[in-house]
Image: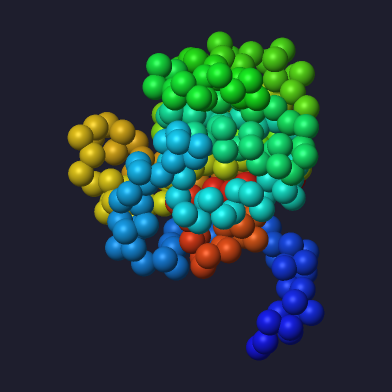
Length: 248
């Protein structure tokens, strides 16, 4: 294969139209082509990563996948649950601006005191403080009804993940919207983060994939796994196993 043949073949233009692109959860396995020990090397320096000088905790595969999805989806509304220091929310807003998408970014966290000062002053992101165990208090139904579609919802708080998913399912997600549940990669919780001091968070993380799977089995004709992104770097080659979902 030559560079010329790669360009002429234009596989990158054909791949998104693969008739087998979308899969049900019952058709997927809980495994990853990236060897489990590799995740320690891939993620052990995640807290050194920055975006515009702000802590930016995204996996290397997600850094490549999200821009592609954002460009294809062109979301009018992005809702991110889990802010940390705000780096990810600013990164998402920057991509919308770069792709000339007139969208709005909302970012939710139970403790916004951890936000970087640069994030606090960015008017493109609406930071909302609240407990995701009570989503109705943070984003009430009447608010959701005003938000333009398509939506991209990113659950990255590791608390009440299925409850958050169910809330948006009941009150707003429409056909064509995307939902991503972060950190369902079992290898990360069992190997990379096994030395966390917060054992409660660790145990919740280990259950995250199984709880999401149980929910998806009851909705597998409504939410399909987008294998174009899910398997870009090998089967489930991501921090997020079987959790890049499109509402159909």
